[in-house]
Image: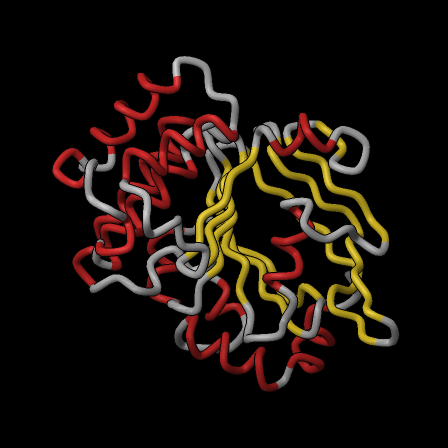
Length: 251
C-alpha cells in the first residue's frame, strides 16, 4: 500500500532537552497506527510536527508524497486533526462551526459537504445547537465531522474517545474503523486505553523518552516480549525503557 505519511529521522530539541530522538515511521492508506507511550514520551511533539505547528530540528515529513518543509500548504490540505482538548468554538452552533471550517479549508460546495457530514455523524437534531452545551460524546462527533470536511488522506487523532462512556466509545471506534476502510484515509491514533488500541489499531509504535522502542501488531507484541497483555507491556516499557531498547537491538 502507498503510504500517506512517511516520517524520517525526526528530531526535536529544546536546548539540551531532546524531546524526539531520530524517530522514523510510516502510515499506509487505510491503516490505523497507534502511537503509544507515557506522558512526556514525545507523542504530542510528534503530532505538532506533523501538523506543521512545530518545525523539526532535523528529519523530514512527507504527507501523501508532499514534503511538508517544501510544500507546506499542499501537504497540510491533505491532513486533519481531532482531539478532546481541541474544542470547537462553544458559542457557534454545530452547523456554524462546520461552515466556518469549510471556509477555512476552502471546501467546494461547502453546504453540500456540511449536510453530508451532519447526516453521517448523526448530528441532524443538534445542527442548530451551540457546541458549548453539547455532551462530551456529541462534541466528539462534531470534532470528527470537522476533521473529515476536507476528506483527509491523513487523520491525526489524539485520545479521540478519552471523554466518552464505554458505549459511545465503542460506537466511535467502529465509525473510525469504517472511515479508514471506506475512504482509505490513514490514521495515526494516540491512546492510553490499551483495550481500545487492540480493537482499533493494526500496528503500534511504543514511544519512550522520544524514541521508538517497539513496533508491531498489538495483539502479538505482548507474548513476543514476555507480557500477558498490552497494558502490562506498556507499563514495563514505561518503567524500563532502556531494557526494552536493548532487547530490541539497534534501530
